[in-house]
Image (cartoon, rainbow, N blue to C red; front, side):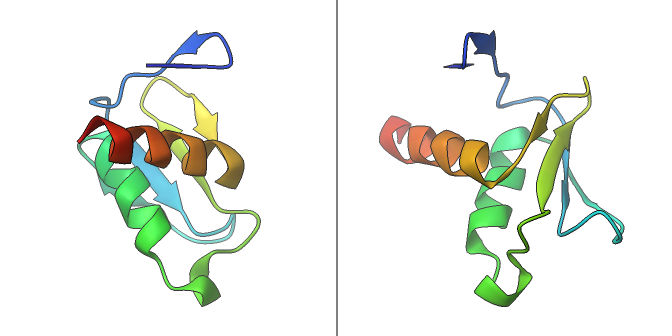
Length: 75
């Protein structure tokens, strides 16, 4: 899939961070991290939350929601 002209590999390992002060939760696939992020309780959906892939791509809530919508449509 592409997001803003850049290729996004949903099978790449990624880490979800609730905010910049917490340890991240590692996932073997970006798709798993996306599902985890959107299923987090609203109290844990801090504006500073992000997902960082093994290759260094970083996604905030806007991108997380776009990518998750893509996953829902694909299945």
